[in-house]
Length: 253
Length: 265
Image (cartoon, rainbow over all chains, first blue to last red; front, side, top):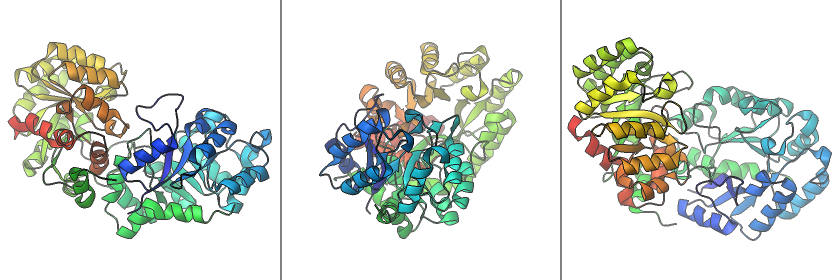
């Protein structure tokens, strides 16, 4: 079974985790240990520094490594720090970047239509997915309130929520899954016993993506959990790689 | 990619004949803040079978709230004596009940010791209400599983150390390994022969298992899952994919627990 991880990062963080991969090469060594084939990645400087700096560091670091696929950190277009939307798109086209990531806690912006409306329109028009951790917050709202706010502003957006936490989030996310058909969850912390099979029985396997949240979290958890989940082989393959390949494949840069 | 024999076995079959798992930190039944697909004893046994968990030691959610429910756990152990043992819950917010609970414990089979949930009960493990329980556990060589959390005023590893200085025969299981205050937790487990690191939730923190094995030794680490909270395969996967030996993995997943449970089987 092919594992395509939707949620890995590398580089030195502002707060050192117990374990980390400093370079893309180090990250690939870690992926080999866990048996992960490919990964959608960001560099810690995209989060801990300005995306102006971090996005370029990512591009330089992953150049030539075909198993690593980058994502761009976003900022509100109004400050034009990342250039115009057309400039961003050109850069993504040139480097085959097919996903965005939002870090509103660190980068201090509102995730509202007022701030990000034009960016949301671009994402929807071109099927570019946006990744965000449910641990993020902005402007006084956080967690699943923030996720619902994003989706109520941009209901057709392909949104992937990562690290939704192990302390029982089903009551939070199931109403959103039912309402917004382009909402996806990574399974890096979906530790609930029977959670994956119960979710698949109710909503199908299309909405779950294999993710590890490396380096913060131990990839062995989601790997064995998915390998042995009480679901069909087809569902397992969809979660392990098929769904992410489909999402990235329909991006039009 | 070259997986160890044990990793290959779990990845292919979901369980291992040579390394059966013992889960030292389970619960049972529904609880306040979470949806459980599999909360009943029978559900849990199905999960345990799927994951190669041969035995679980649990304390029901109901008993953590109301001490009256302790006795219900005895019935579960009686029904499934090869699969379950239990911890008797002590709720220190009902101090008038403590002596009665010790008395009831002493007359009931199927229990290996006590469970303290001090962060939830908002009462420190070093407080005087726990003293008669700890004295009894010391006199009878029992296990005490404590929820422990880093820098908590109720159950941090610093407070566990205070108990370990005084009680030498109780086997203290630091539930969640004093989550977040890793260095101190590991130090306490290393320095006191009767203190163990229990992995529920802690296993997910990348690198922490390697750190524990290196500094405290794999003989001082116990596996647990909070079942019906967490899929045992998640925690087992974290142990398997830590950079330690298969011997260490077997110590953590079953050997250490077998040793501790021997008097209660």
